[in-house]
Image (cartoon, rainbow, N blue to C red; front, side, top):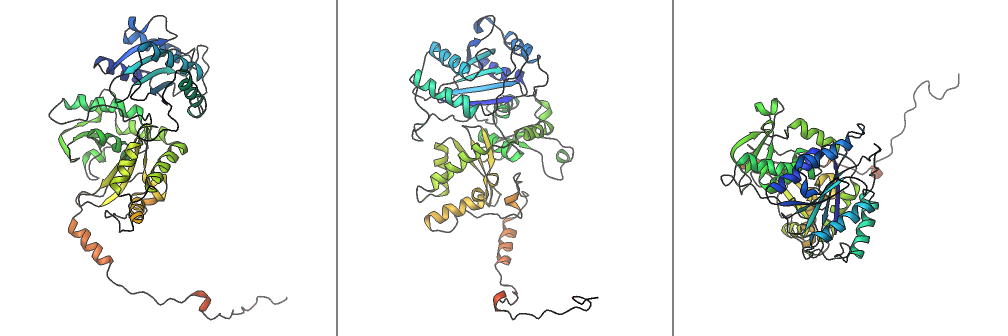
Length: 421
């Protein structure tokens, strides 16, 4: 079993996300904890109001919503009763046994999984401390539950057998086959609340997996100048298709201002999440003779998607890793200089003793910038080739002599210095 814990500002948004899944037949609310009646007898408002009422007891807690997913191995098809026992045991062991919570069983993934919705404010108004809860209480509870319920263990299994959560399983948007606004809204509700991203490029790495892009427009456009944002559907070649939809037209209003707040709240120290991706990359590269395609396939088996950012001329200028286990997104340069696009290509080439497999567009200061931006689309292949040719032309180099081979210069004695007065 793999447990993923997230906190958020909006209890309403998390409940609505799960209830929307229920309405589309992709999920079912199978149980509850600390509610006055069974989940089957409650409507959406009753479920939500119980959580909102207790949340209002402490206005100082800004991220009161708690969203937990319990993910099981594909072979573990348990009945509802056992799933509820597992959920209750887990909530009890992490300190949420007395909290009101809802249990949703989702059917939209390749593996069985539950979503638990709760709050971290107790009935007396005090706050539950969730500092390092994933590393401490959750890990301890996971191991105990695996043993007591005879579950498939997440530790010590091969990458093909590991109980690895896959992306938020929603259909890829296809222009012309579904209502555009509704399709985009479904993806946004799933991704924006579930993943941790700190820039527009990191967010687009996740949205691109579902053929969607958040677009500010070109630097000289009216949308960019006014701080606007539109969402576009992409075709199979990741090219815009159809008419863009303004962010303000969606009910959740995922505007640029909204996303920038998310960037700030997500921009916390995520050392363990970074370490997991670095270890995964290093492990695949150490297996011998990896091409870039092999690295991508190997990381995908570990639940990590690799998104390459290339210019129209095919120049690779960025790489982003989407970890569906921790729900964290990192540009390669944010993991360290050995994991930037240029370094990854060179490491793949070095492993087989060849030249880099893909051309790399080197940008000044790229290693120090985490929020990488795509070069202008108008960049012409002929200009790139000409620039590369000019760079390879021999130029003047001044004569150089090592410092230890130069004659020692005599120090000039300045007047007025060193004389006694």
